[in-house]
Image (cartoon, rainbow over all chains, first blue to last red; front, side, top):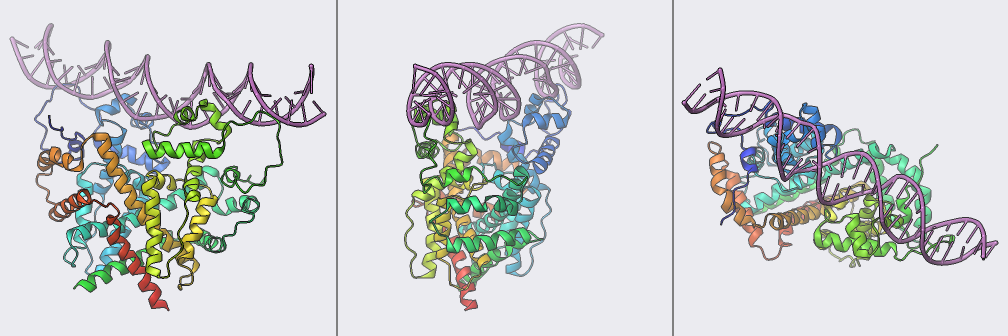
Length: 250
Length: 250
DNA sequence: CACTTATTCCGTACGTCGTACGCGAAAGTT
DNA sequence: AACTTTCGCGTACGACGTACGGAATAAGTG
């Protein structure tokens, strides 16, 4: 027997489904899948992915824990729906005329999404289904690099580099915020409390470059008022590399 | 009162500690921290991070579950020790003379590490302490891009881009492998089982570019005998971008 | 109207996880 | 031999995802 189609697909594409062939009998659902997913997004935005438990979500929705499973098959699928919903709700700006600006826009948009929803990089690391949100987003991203001389595979990899980079920056910033929240001490306070200990422990070993660079990076990331500035250098290098390649081939 | 130093530091830097001031009394430990961490690495390599439970680890070590906590404060700290141990055990090759080769080596080395230990990208996304392994590795990475005209902040960001990219590729490959293992069907089989369903669900919406590019990417990634080939395009673009920047400034 | 049937709601419960607690066992010190 | 310190670990707690089955509800059917 062949493999069955993935049931999460029907959920992801639930809109656009022209009224299911009306098994109208039975008790009505008091909520919609969208309600559930939106509430889940709200919790994850506020308290983090770990805090998003089925019980808490149900409580915030005013229903019993197990009632959630009439809307969503399980937590894994809920996460996939959350990611797709975020993408679906976002209105994507038109692509600028300049290639460099298009590449930057792809990365910056992804970065913004990950800043608004800090759980996004973690969820995207899981196996999510193909929904309308990701499809729209992917199509939009690709539209920014079509007809510039890249073949199909290169287009995919270019998008992957851009959004992978943006996601990494967002995730590392979120990790720092979370560490502060959990430990109750800032990066600077941590160093103040551990510098002496670390000095004696590292006795003998020398890290001349790492010490200097690490210190510079630490203060820079903390002092910066605008976190998105952290994108600039790496993004510029990636854009330079892609544009150079495109120019060379044309 | 000021914050106390992080106790995980003493564990990370446990070697090089010249025999702790001899509280020699009491029962001896039957194992070393290294034994525990190595066993944990072995399990995570074999069965994945989720399969690495304290109980299983204890069983494989032939001790009771709670005995683990005499070696390691908890699971979070164990993960940090695992990452550092992997880095510490690795012998880092000397840096080549050519800058492009140095940049490539930084990325490829990180990619190899993540392929040998598929849990590494996930663990590195957590808040890990500063241990000898990461310190050695970071110093080595920075040594490859020193004195080429980058300031300290740019050096840190260059390394971040390189290893972030390498880690992303490794993680996406691992995700695919895991999806195959869990579902029992390959990427191609999944598409075969879901193409029809997906076609009806997407009715109306068109994804001309995404469909073409996605198909190309899917077949390419599956057909490729050497997974590390997936690095090449993106890595070349990043290297181009960095080298162009360095050349421009000198 | 009553009765059947399909569906939702959800309390209870199971298995698994990390780990707090406390007691008995072992190994130095005195 | 007695004491002190440390390890080993059985038991247990709370939180998690979710399987199961019965009660509640709404539509279709006589």
